[in-house]
Length: 195
Image: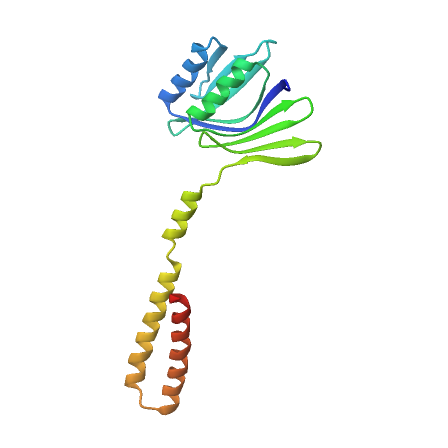
């Protein structure tokens, strides 16, 4: 089995409430991760993680409307920190693009709302999709809820009713023939939509 060289969080987005921020920090403390929390004067925070080689991994959290937002990237080599970061993205419903780097290939994981939605193997300049989440139930539900056809049918029926009222009020034969031609086209459209 190939040995992982490092894990890169290329695009990471975590949004944490104040309570979740405390849980986030506690999660790393509980697993004996070396960390420092720096509170900046504007209310922002930096969580600094130390890996085995003494390298600092800085996660900057900007405070926006009572929520701490972390957007950025980092490279982690410590297996414990990699697992904790994966758990944090999953637990706190984060989004991320994660590159797991191996000697001859890279595995790319896409997270949305804490769930892996796509896994791609990148090797020798080519991508191979390993896994892709398909929300079949959601897609079917959206399709079921679409009602553009019903709305169009309603519009055509209104036009037909308006034209029928107009036809009953008008005595001129030429105008009635134009209305009849338009009614015939609308009836055909209605037939197609209802089929």
